[in-house]
Image 1 (cartoon, rainbow, N blue to C red):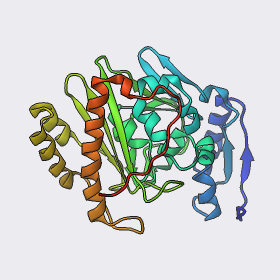
Image 2 (image 1 turned 30 degrees about the vertical axis):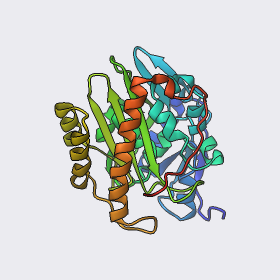
Image 3 (image 1 turned 180 degrees about the vertical axis):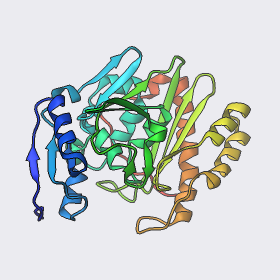
Image 4 (image 1 turned 120 degrees about the vertical axis):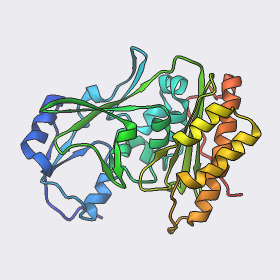
Length: 304
């Protein structure tokens, strides 16, 4: 289906040119990076802009690098590039793991991680890994630069704190000072281009600190300080994990839709939370359990 709406198109070669175009068109511009969500929205007539600003030619937005104990992922980095990045494999494996569960090879070749969090659909895969890693979103506009912690990024379903004249340049992830390991679990109906019915991210540290985040079970993805504080205070015994599992009912607010009922989502979040926590525990004890190959075999989580 073609896009049945008219709008202007510009492809700036530099970041400065892109910023100037955003300032010129104020609230009437949209950014094109991967376009996997944007093109579908334009076909449906959703938020059709006055001008489309294609940033794919801005090479400085394509980097994955370590800078002063910060992992930086550029706005144009695709999920396929995440899956081929040794830096991400070694330092943010949970993000590497989630990238392998995004749609299909064709989508991963175009879709960007930054585009994923800017679209802010409830079922996005990037949010839980970024939340448990305390990621920061870096933005720039004609007024200067601004940094937003991932916990303050999402306002509502499909809504973020980005301003109309701003452009995300990259996302940064602080590298923890202590040993850590993570795990990501995603519930799908089948293998293929299926959206998440629910997902859970866990990051475990050697000092028994645990970060836990849930996605696709509310209008925005969510960290759970209450569960984290419980696990930190009482340790990771079977009784404490069971207590934490029951707390999930008060943390998430799933809905019933065409993909799953709210009861099923709630049940599977409890299952995935325990699986992710157990996997993270195994990985922190034996890092070699994490595959050394820079690819990810996609597996569908079956219901119990």
